Image (cartoon, rainbow, N blue to C red):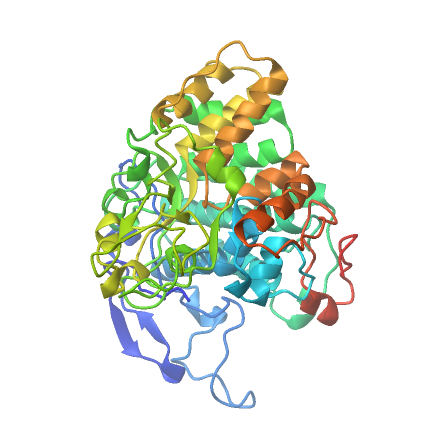
Length: 536
């Protein structure tokens, strides 16, 4: 699981009861607010309270709360408290994009073929033979609502704190951005979900019904519009990584695109494009290198993972995707690139493909032997490379590749360009150049020929293919298939591919809907909830 780390530059005060501690003072950058700089990376911060609203004491509930135990009532007093509370929201976001989200967004798509030895959960997710009891749904649901409750606590309590009004406005904008992000992931996965706009202070407040989709989206849009005006364009120092106005605009464009509001999607994406703050990196591989995270002009918002297995480690993606059984190393070899995806990179010119997104050529193992991915015991075929650092790849016997700290990119400029191209092609006004020009920026960076003179339908197909090639393994594919209404066809097509990659493994179920099932444990404890049609 992700390692919990403290804010950069933070100090710790005296230890409090139950093992809790409180920051003696925040970093200067957190006290004074933002300074101009360019990029947005998600700061790794301390999750100060377990749920920011459900603080408890180790003592009996009959005893008065000791004065040195943090509770919502004695915590929200200073600007340092306000900063720490918002940092706690960011910390929960880290957990929301970990394993469960990845199972849904990438494994349960046509991009990945999971080996039978993946385990019952991963194999079922990949082949779409899962039910509402599968843990990834509960993981995504629970993580999102923990973000929401922490953000709601900030929005309810921080306005009453006497503090610098500029800093307060910014912190409230960050809370709204993160709440909108959590609700957006919920509605994309589950459709109608309970809408909670205030801090939940008792279990009774959790037993609510599903709110119609339009009402949830109205809050998402409102939160992001307020965040755009409240947040700075950039930060400096220890504050780099917090949400910016550009991140709020990019997310709002994606919200409009998902709603098929082509006019507003094109308008808001165009605002990001004309701001002049973002640009494509020349080298596609550099987007995912740890060394270029801080100076990455393409990344708009990303999540910092400082460690999953050991300090300084982070990515489980290579752990699951690299082949097992090679000498001197340790990997699971649980999945491979689907043949239909690999075929999209047949052009040697496409820099996003071989040895950038996945490895298909021979490699040298820890003992110096040349091995092909198709050789036993790997067998599965191409493996994913995108988040694997090249130097670690050459020293697998040290297990360094399991200890990566790659950030998870939520929004980047190539996504904005392709959203704009799609929205304009579907009817949105071209406020920042033609749809063709936006698409061709991405294609030229990849080293493939630009498009010209395509019909609307052909251009639509081109955008969809480039989204698949561009964002492999970045948590985008399931959501694209769902919003395009082609999830079922894409999953059923895996039947033939399974026979090619793993003979005998041909069990693939159809998709009941373009939504996931609500987690069964949530329905068991809250009888006001109803299941999505077609799921059990």
